[in-house]
Image 1 (spheres, rainbow, N blue to C red):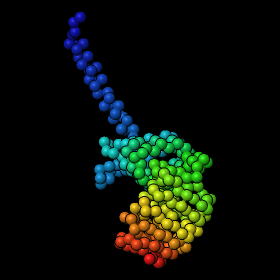
Image 2 (cartoon, rainbow, N blue to C red):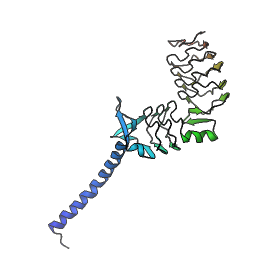
Image 3 (cartoon, one colour):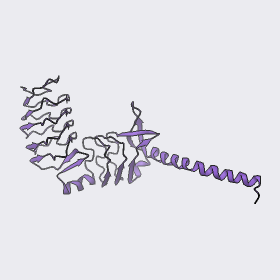
Image 4 (cartoon, rainbow, N blue to C red):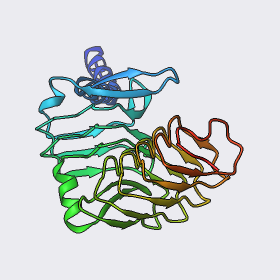
Length: 264
């Protein structure tokens, strides 16, 4: 069989289309994510997602990508999807490290969330007022994600933090005036900002030697609290103990008593 020049041209054209097609598909997929999410490039060169475009706000399922524009997505910014009434399912891709405060706050229809092991930080009220949170509390006293204590059911007067927890997220017990006694496990390494702020019924608390970081205002406004912190603590946030009745501390960190009324 002889190939004419015309036939050769057709064959070459077909081969070129086949070769280019995957690139076109990839561009379409990338473009789809770009049209769904609003985002910014940070100083470290990584991406933080800040919200949804008008198109994205109508989607019932959101897949947070691991990359946008060839750059790694590492943060979902505070309030990025707050008050969204359409989303029912969210899949966070591996590589995302931080879900900041109020990200899914009041997304009342949200009932399914997939969170990868790469997530290290979960902010205050990140999942509050969602269907997912309500379902979790139907069968659990607390919500723990990747060894992070994210939330605790209301109405408890006593509570023991599970052994698996290493981080207490920001604001977990914020302004909880019902709880009177909390027992911390010996694995906790970090206590987030405002974690126990305003827990006015707690009168005594001993932090284990495992604690290395105490966040901003973590125990503020607990005017009846007598608290002991280990000398092994490496970092304490501003006003961590503002208004606390008495603080026991024998370490050498600068800034003590961090707002406490008395210290020894």
